[in-house]
Each structure stands twice: as C-alpha cells, then as structure tokens.
Image 1 (tube, rainbow, N blue to C red):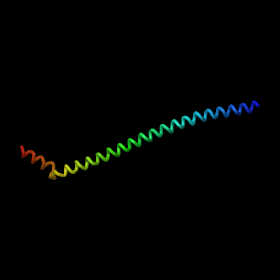
Image 2 (tube, rainbow, N blue to C red):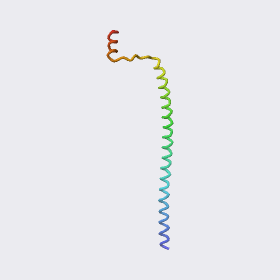
Image 3 (tube, rainbow, N blue to C red):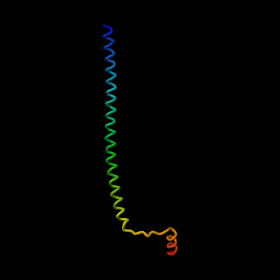
Image 4 (cartoon, rainbow, N blue to C red):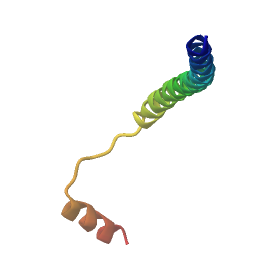
Length: 85
C-alpha cells in the first residue's frame, strides 16, 4: 500500500508540474499571437505609407517634367554665371 501511495503522489506532482508548464506555454502562445497581430498591423501601415510615397513621387515627377534643364558642363555654367553679373 505504501508503494501505491508513493506512485500516486509522484503522479500528482507530475500532473501539477504539467499544468504549470501548459499554463506557461499558453501564455507564450498568447504573447506570440499578440506580437503577430502587432506586426501585421505595422506591415499594413508600412505598405500604405509606401503606396502614398509612391503616389507623391509620381506627382512630383510630373511636376518636374515641366522644366527643361540644359545639359552643360560645370565650366560652361560658371562662365554663364560670371557673364550675368
């Protein structure tokens, strides 16, 4: 009978340890789920911001296309500046 009591006590202790371990695993999984949701939200916001920046870059490019810039060397540009003064 003493052996049976010892075995039952060991089983009880092991069960208690398993409950603690399973509880910790569940908490860790919840933490991972929260992190995943946070990262997913951040990725969506980043994607939206990138699309917005791309649209702004396109608009800026269209605005700049109105200007025509002559290709000159730096020396020629300096000469033109000197003559204008």
